[in-house]
Image (tube, rainbow over all chains, first blue to last red; front, side):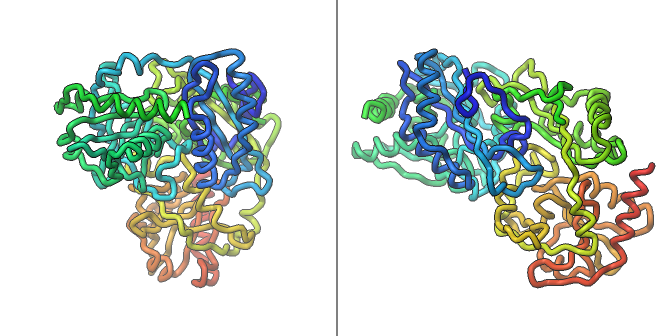
Amino acid sequence: MILVNGNEDSALDPRDRGLAYGDGVFRTFPLRAGKAVLWQRQYDKLAADSAAIRIECPPKQLFEADLGKIAAAHVDGVIRITLTRGIALRSYAIPATANVTRIVGWSVGADSSGSHADGVRARWCDLRLAIQPALAGIKHLNRIENVLARSEWNDPAIAEGLLRDVNGHVMGGTMSNLFLLRAGELITPALDGSGVAGVTRDVIIEGARANGVNVRIAAVMPEDVRAADAVFLVNSVIGVWPVAAVDDTTWGANPFAERLRHWIKNAEIR
Amino acid sequence: MILVNGNEDSALDPRDRGLAYGDGVFRTFPLRAGKAVLWQRQYDKLAADSAAIRIECPPKQLFEADLGKIAAAHVDGVIRITLTRGIALRSYAIPATANVTRIVGWSVGADSSGSHADGVRARWCDLRLAIQPALAGIKHLNRIENVLARSEWNDPAIAEGLLRDVNGHVMGGTMSNLFLLRAGELITPALDGSGVAGVTRDVIIEGARANGVNVRIAAVMPEDVRAADAVFLVNSVIGVWPVAAVDDTTWGANPFAERLRHWIKNAEIR
């Protein structure tokens, strides 16, 4: 089921600026037992990301009505919300009277999180992310870099690719945020030049700090990854993937993964 | 009139990767007396840009059938072709069996080229373009940078904004390529880190060289713009705009503009 401005199975106007210029933002998160997981945080991110590219985010209630329609048909799965600047006028200029387009879609959830709970294999991607502070951290629709990076491998045994920016800093996975554990401290890349600052990343940072675990948000180099005691990839859909290998560097199971999962669960039930 | 995969007024599937990730490329060019201007060059660019992001471009004949349908209804205007990787599977991975989406749309042409023929006012944009060699020069659908740059001004007397990259190099306008005239030589920015390498830019480079005018494709700094004898902004729809001012730097009319226009006309009738 996909709702476009609240209408079921409604199709998109091909003049939409979301298509024309990737002029919009999105969120992807689980629907579990009819509930949008961490919905308030997802909405807050959507609103903040929209504001960062000067799109006015509709009120939460509109999305909740859409989510209610979906939950009446599907209790579990994955929700994607896309918000665009609306119909294009064949100009980059932002229309004075733009009506945003609101798309809320359901799809069946992958069961990949379960199968990867014991540790995934990852690889280093060749593509280097461009540095654009004006868009860094935002989950916007300009994602060809991610598509090209993900196209570097086909081996289904490799679950994720790690991305560096043009300066060689590690920014995370193609679709996930990265945490390193070293000497009891968590380290996650600063996302001021590229990357997407996800809800799960926030939840883990907050959970760690609330539980006396130091979190450093910093520049991360490949040698920091290789020297880590444990490596974790996280997002709203996969939860926490412990990393068993990045190319030739390997790690054994680390009980810290359960702490990350616990902090996420705690945030979900609050 | 907008054709989606050849079907008139057909709407877009909201799961299209062109919307989901800006995963596609486009062209914009005039329709004049029922003919797509410089069509062979536009198609060649579309095919080359598609290949650069691993999208298979449909054969020229399919687009020509679309253009024929449009020309039966409209003899003049502007055509936009958008080509996307097709329907998304909620993954950045390129589907093994992706069917591209082909969108060919007509819109009424702006008459701005005539009114700006004597010289336009431009400004320096604050936004700096990110450097991404993997996407530089390609007219892809990831254009939020252009949207944000164009949103920096509302004054209708300012026709275009000049963009620099993060290193301070001038890359062109938000929707146009840049040529400088200095001591009888043309200079245009090298587009190996960002920007769009347009058809009109190619035509002018070739026309100049065929007529004994030296063209240097090089890094351009703002001081090079200010020191130029004349400045021109070009694209397929506007043709050639001589620049009368960039912020406080001004230029008088320069007869060289007519030479650029002549080279474009020559390419169009060949």
